[in-house]
Image (cartoon, rainbow, N blue to C red; front, side):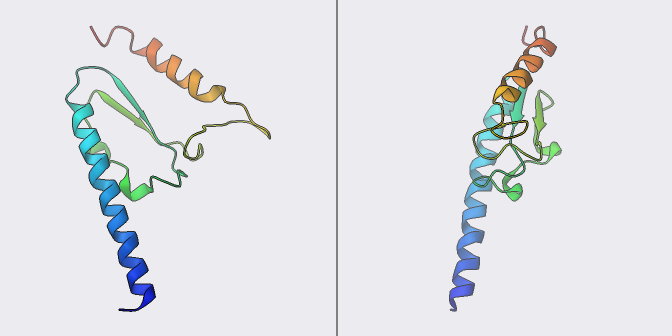
Length: 103
């Protein structure tokens, strides 16, 4: 087996493992009767797009957003050096919108 083939198979196994882990987490989230906001940046270097759920895989109580930017840990916005208030503002908007949804 060539190194290129080994590398490709390794990436495929890693993507499959990430997808399986994501599906396990999503199945547990879907069991909850709470409005849930699921955020993952499209440019997250640890969670590739192939590991992200499709809308049909999610409970109707889960709102999934996949902004183009945000990276793995930041959701830093604005010009350099950026601001870390985007995530806090987004979470507060979710809570305000769904304040009655958990009752």
